[in-house]
Amino acid sequence: MADRDFPPDVHPDSGCRVPLVKRKDIGVPEAQALYDHHMAPHSKSLAGLWGPGGIKLHSPKLALASQSIGKYLRWEAGIAEPIRELAILVTARCHDSRFEWAAHEPEGLRVGLSQEAIDVVKHRRPTDGLPEEYAVIVALGREMFDDRYVKPETFAAATRVFGAQQLVDIVSLMGLYAGTAALLCAYDIQLQDGPQAELPVP
Image (cartoon, rainbow, N blue to C red; front, side):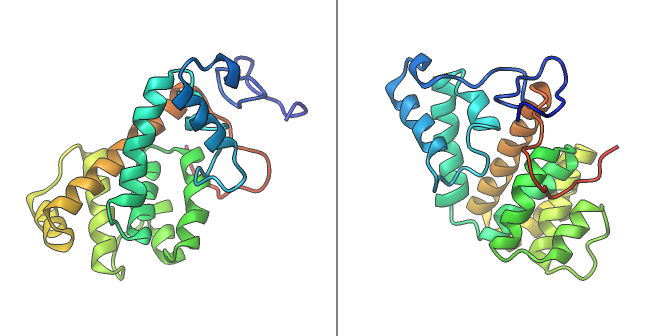
């Protein structure tokens, strides 16, 4: 990483504006275990410590609380994997979050989300031709984050397709990743080395 050119306030070890936290400096044992989880070769974390997980460990109790919510929303809420990744990608696109996009486009493809659906989101195309559940997620995200108002007909369609409980979980998932996009923006996270799924941004 040291041979890359980083902005002057970005630490090469973390790719962001704070250095990587050292395990010995984490004063909460449960958060030390979370550190180990991020470092594990088969961790479900897509970015390891180079990303939001590493940043949040500077506030160990926040890291633990965030991990608990994220675990529920991503793995335990019963959201179908392609829907989960589409919801995250719509959120990343609306916030121009290149880091989130680079992590979740390949994950979306891995779990069966179509390239067509991904490209509709990436290039802000109309949703014509997408399955209804995909089109509803895209419309919901665009209206929440771009328009700051969800139309009654969009909300009604989302409730009909997903049901009341799962819609709360999906919207909360999107809110979680909107918060992550804000964190990554504030800390000027840089993309990891190697080929990355590109997100066109201004």
